[in-house]
Length: 466
Image (cartoon, rainbow, N blue to C red; front, side, top):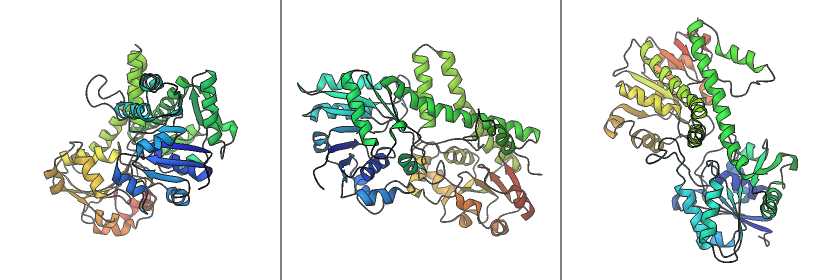
């Protein structure tokens, strides 16, 4: 490629770093973009025709830019040395032990990446927080960089949170509602902020590139996800009332969504939210609130998680109760394992908790998902200690189609809202099932009345099918 006007490096080739920086390269042919990761297998996948992440539109973007101005490598030090801007997009899982276990984000990877930058850099850099992090993480990063850097080298820290929805990430990146860039409100910080803004301005109107102070930017990401998850838990709470009273949760959501103060988005009842962000960010917010001696605030946000767990437990119990209070040795088809459609991501998927509950009841589970590999399903169920290898091997079968999964089962449970599940031949499925044949719609995507006419015993979140 011609001499680039700028070198951008992303530390971390996961769900955020990979798509984000691929789109930057796609839209900014004058900028060299290098995505680095310690995981050789992941980098090999990014350099192959079988990308490690499924996301609609991602292949088109990567294949157009890769080898032109988009590169994937494990040579972290070389990439850092050449970089003008470094995105830190590493994993920030919830801590499993120690102070804040179960709530606080584990920033070990962020700290490790920051120390590596300080040790390797031989020129000044703009360092961008791209990972979802607790408020004031940038302050810790700046302290580490300044304590470990060479003389004469300056590091400016920016916060540039991602607001991607998996399944629509490429569309979200190409046409975002807004891009937030937070910086220290010093002349140097504002200059760095403007440099990053100039990158996004290649394809995003400047009116949608919002600059603010560092702490507001960090908190905005947590707040946005908390508010979205709150809406889901709110409509899910109402779905329980609908089932008890005969109201229809879709009709209630539609009526409420017509109010312009409320709007219709994120008012779809379901078996519960999942994904890498919602639960993690709310737990971060709870921990932050309690750390700031605001226990009432923490308790308020924690209830969003409590309601989500309740919805999953309520749904799994409903399956057992409808199947005459026992599913021991019965066969249950689970359609969908990803946490939502159009992604292969299974993190915090409702399917994991439901299947674990069914296995505790000694059911035999037949699973089909169009994008999730068997190795991932096995890892999610066994490595998380929700079940044992022996139980998994004895009671779990991974199927190649929904029809295979449903053959000879007592119940079909729809957990992920894949479009293909809407158009299945349910008459064919009904004929191959044990009778009475039960179907449980955990995503409100099926025609309950039509299924009832076929002969199914139909159970739907937030509704009574008469």
